[in-house]
Length: 186
Image (cartoon, rainbow, N blue to C red; front, side, top):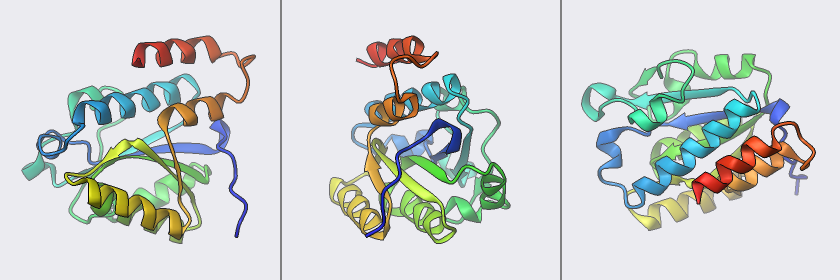
């Protein structure tokens, strides 16, 4: 079994998968998903962790929800493939960041997140699943996808664990700012 590496802000990126209004409407726990994904994006901004996103067929499923879209550095590319890697040069652009650790947030866990994660793993990236910022319409689909991805080599975690792992120490210059985000999250 390979050794699991700790997350490091300097070697991480966040990928947001399909957090779109029309998809959200059908997902139980959607408010929690948006709050938790927004939290990890806010922490990423404080720690200079780059963020990338994609949208599944926005013509039919609508745009990224406003609460997430306002936190993105640029509009997400549209895709029809389930994996983000099918969105033009998405994987190549991610690899150009030279950040081998990818924290995934989004939906649906068993479709677009799963296929994106499998492609990232195949490309040699280290995938971390922020499970409290992932969702599917059905719990069995979500749970099964997380288990399958863990067996494939992805590491399940939570958004708060990601934040503190990126900080590493209460002496970090951004500790106070991130602590405020934790308090605001509830």
